Structures are given as structure tokens and as C-alpha cells.
Image 1 (spheres, rainbow, N blue to C red):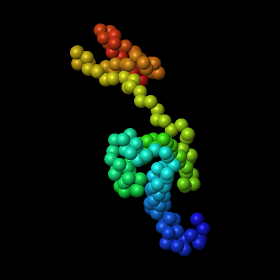
Image 2 (image 1 turned 90 degrees about the vertical axis):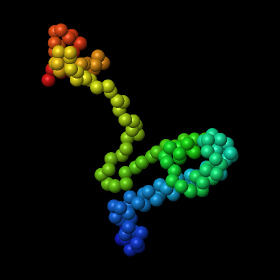
Image 3 (image 1 turned 180 degrees about the vertical axis):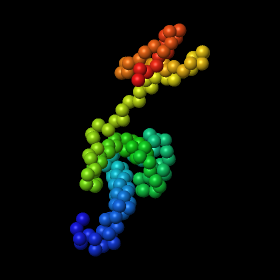
Image 4 (image 1 turned 90 degrees about the horizontal axis):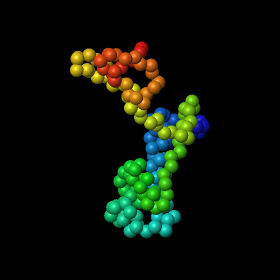
Length: 153
């Protein structure tokens, strides 16, 4: 941003943290609006087909395409797919020192807990180890209960 940019109300607002955040939201909203304006013109699909595919009225299709109402990310993805497109996100750092978002952003798969706390019929506490977890060493907790184990800390 140059010093000339700070001479305008917009420039002063954009230079604030709140202004930058609000203007980013406005830019994203405008981009989605342009997409909805462009979709029916670029696709050979008719509004009637889209309404049937999405199981909504043609009136609702018209509302969304004309920017009436708030559209969820899921709805945006559905409309794009109904017109033959798919949604892909691309983000980039807006501030210095913010790292790039990795291309493969999948969350790690959830794992079952490695062990479960159990109370035996004798009132003893023990930890039952799940068979799939071999990353920790274990010792047997009770001779009469060979399936109950405690973590060797």
C-alpha cells in the first residue's frame, strides 16, 4: 500500500486489521457473485435441469444466481457441480510471515485409543491395550487377567 492509498477513506480502512478482514470477505462474496452470474451463461444446462438435480424450485435457482440470500459453501459446491464444475480452494498468505498452506491439507486419520481404562470384577484398575497399537511397551498387570495390561511408564 502506498502513501497515496492512505489519503482515501478506503485506503485508511484497508490499512486496519478489521478493514482488511472485512474487505477480504467482500472480495470473496463478489467472486462468488460473479461465478453465479457466469454459470448459466457458460453452461448449456437449463435452469429447469439444475432445479431438478438440486431438488429445489426454479425460483430458488433464480434467487441464488441473482445473489439473493446467503449461500453456504456446500450450496456453492452443489450449484457448481450441477452446472458441470467442481469447487477447488486456493489460499495464499496475505500477511508477511504467514506460511503457505500445504497442497495436501488432509487431516490425519483418527486413531482408536491405544488403551482403555477398565475396572476388573475385583475392583482393580487396569489399562486394556488395543491389539493394533504396538508403539508402546506393556507389562501384564494381573496374572489372573492376562488380557488386562498397564503401560510400562
